[in-house]
Length: 632
Image (cartoon, rainbow, N blue to C red; front, side):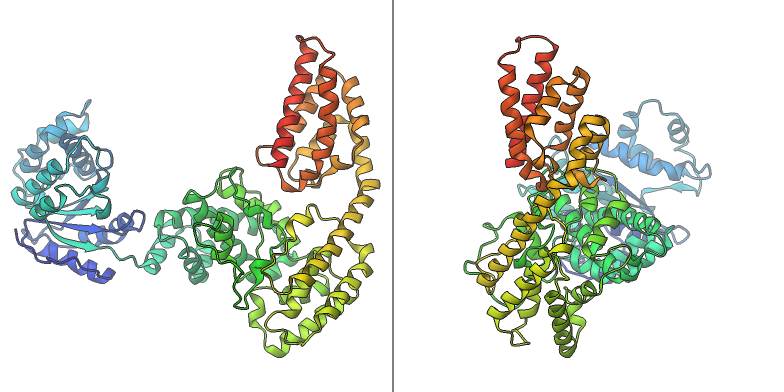
């Protein structure tokens, strides 16, 4: 056997093409292997680039004919006969052309595999004519046979048998064989000695992600010109973010497919006059980034729809993710010590404000179909849009956010920061933004030379001034977190305390006004009441409305309700608190515990059997499970 290239090379794509072209145009009795990690794009490159090149290449032995490429996956195959059958099936589309017949050489070599086929149908006609002596025969020497998934053979078929079969093809039939494999995953025993007998050249597949991306979107989205143009425009952003976690083309293809639905749904659902259209240059990179980040995490097995690893708890913001000033925390964690959430934020959002989009997460992880209206609502919340307009105070605030702040000149940054503080003085920012206001004003070395004590008091004073215009934010104390490693933590914690105090007072007002109506609703229309508490499109799904309910009155209602209504109420609690309930409902635990206490006491006086006893016991189990889920 002649080894044209004895050393493993690391060619770029053009070099790989040149090597394969040389192999096809020379006399050879060896195979070529292309090796690389799983998912890196070897199969994709063969099917979409090399196969086209092969089809245009004149055969070495007959200048009137061109090579015919076929590909056979070895995944799970357990015998040489099964491989022969797969080769024949791959040839069949060519053979259906009645002017092309199977050469005797091929027919005899594959006869064992062919005989394994049942109900031959058209195969029989082809086989019966294998001895026809015409120039239209397909012979082995004009076929390029690609074996994919070399390392994924069934353990019933030994490497020795496979290598022997390939050796018979290249030496006895002069066939050109290309093997696609992840060589690092092939069992080492006897492999290298056997490899020397048949593999003349091993080429390391060095992925050209840019070229692969261009080819991928051209092929997959050829019929969607608008989306394809969007992907072309955002190519650098897509590949930069994707490259932080993976180089797997299958994962990239999955993400682009899912984002196609997100992009198209958003574009179609958003009214033409909606102000969000003015923010498309910020909206699309933000949701694209989140889709890529979550898609990689999901496909790599780190998260699922139910196993969220707490990444949704950044619903408002985490100050640690804003720190860009080069400081290091008091204790630097190793990768093994970091949580999945910490790695996620560090990898994708250490230079950006983080926003969790439940509509995208649920869709990517298979928990729900994509709801474009939910995404639009989430984006309007993120950009502080009210009645299709952004208040001027938040226009300033948005300009100081990441990453758009880096587009500013120093003079513009200072002017906008002063303007932001002026709005803060007038109470124009919500409590959940107060800590960010302090951070925005003091980052980058405190260019305004602000006195921190005075700034703290100034922001707090502004908070109290705007109290009449604020709205309650569920679980603000959990989302608005301050780490001791943050810069100026003593000031941040004092501002946070006031923000939470004001937010809690708003909750009390809501208890007296907003929730009074919903509490009365269960007495008058139980179906409408249940619908509001379990419908994700209704605000009451996300608000701890039961926290303010009278336990005594609700229990009395349940006690005197019909069996049918009792059963509906059982269903309400089961659906409101799934395995991973919305974190904003944690404060409803007190209501559930009080209700459970009364239900269990009632069960003690009920017969052990019967329909009524069953309903009460079922309600008790549901309440216990709901409490456990909220506390976890």
